[in-house]
Amino acid sequence: MIDISIFQLEAVKAISVEAAASSSVYRFIVGPEKKEYHIHSAVLANHSSALDAMVNDGLQESGEKIVDWTDVDSGAFLGLWHFLYSGRYAAPVLISRLGEDHPATKIREEEAGTLPDRTLPICTLPGCKRPGCKMPGCTIPAGLWLDFQTLRLADLEESPPPQPKSVGRRVVVNSYTDLLLQHARVCVLADKYMIPPLKQLALTALQKELGIHLYDLETISEIAPDAIALLQFSFNNPAPDKLRELVTLFAACIITDLWECEGFQDLMGSSEEFSAAVSGCIGTNLDGRLLKRLLDH
Image (cartoon, rainbow, N blue to C red; front, side):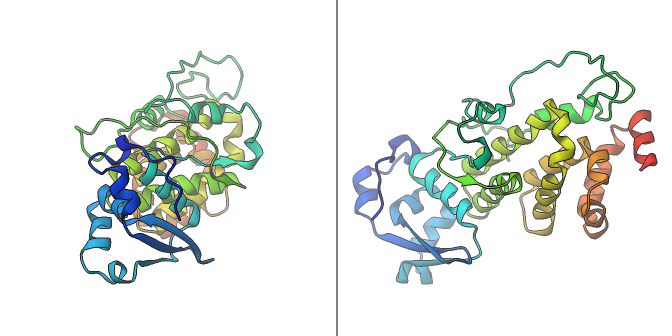
């Protein structure tokens, strides 16, 4: 049975703990490995009209109380599960960051819905690529950086930004690619089953994670292949517009690093939507320095 010790009234609003605990338990068969998980029907129904229909509208799942989600990543499912019971987003953590005072962990654990305000000084080092830097070697136009940093992630203008909270390291991933993809997969899952708060929390976490590397651009070339995997996932699969907009802005910011990586030009050629989106971002922010770098490549 399910441990409901993390159950919180504020996360499920009108439903009582007793009603949730006494409701039917649904079995979810998740991922190609067919792991079995459980969620109370009242918890499912309370968060989303799509999930409500699944358990209450006479669908096959409502009769058998078994849901086949073998096409859903198990890490993304655990992110959904945790949110349904706690109202919080359990951000994944890299195994290499465990026990370390890593800046990514610190930023992820801040209880804020926007990127931290970090004013970067004008750099005096040759070849600097910091956002907004005036040095000749800088390749990220300030306009692109500002667009990425201030992108509104809510679908509706009146929707207030959710407040991510630290919930402990509940899902550990082995690579930076897995870290980025987990945020994106949770976002896609939340969008598919109409859970806007979870979708926005996953997007906010992804925005922060990517933004870390725009503050420390020495790592950009190292994480560029991981960013390509994120782009491929976002444009080769059904994905919400906000996810695609966010990753496109990031790609535009580091376009000269991505251009040298295997798979990027293939994605530009195979996805007209991505090619048009990233070209549009760059076109409105292109300056002589960036144009020269692109022509050199």
